[in-house]
Length: 108
Image (cartoon, rainbow, N blue to C red; front, side, top):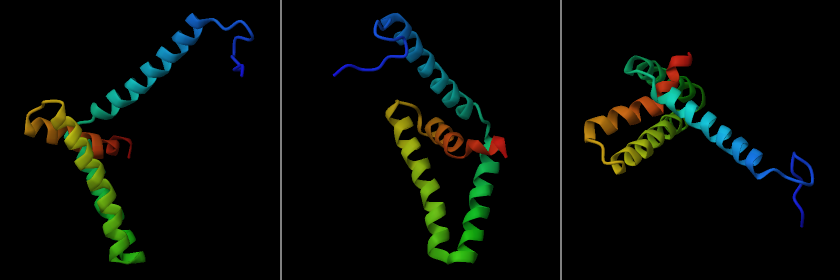
């Protein structure tokens, strides 16, 4: 089974490698931008989650509101675990996980 390559029948492995590495660089850049958020941005994100959970809880019931908050808590705990595995101090891991989970508040 032959694959269809953007370069045609004679695929250039070097061009494919360059495209692959460019995609990896752009993905890493996005992660760096999220982790560049400061605590103030993360506080805004956390406030938005609390507000959204409260609004959803009032409209659809407390279980659904708790589910919204629980999803973000799970993201925080997963990021915290990964950062602890990276041999960081507990406080640094908690700060990084907090900025990762809620740092999107910089775009609000």
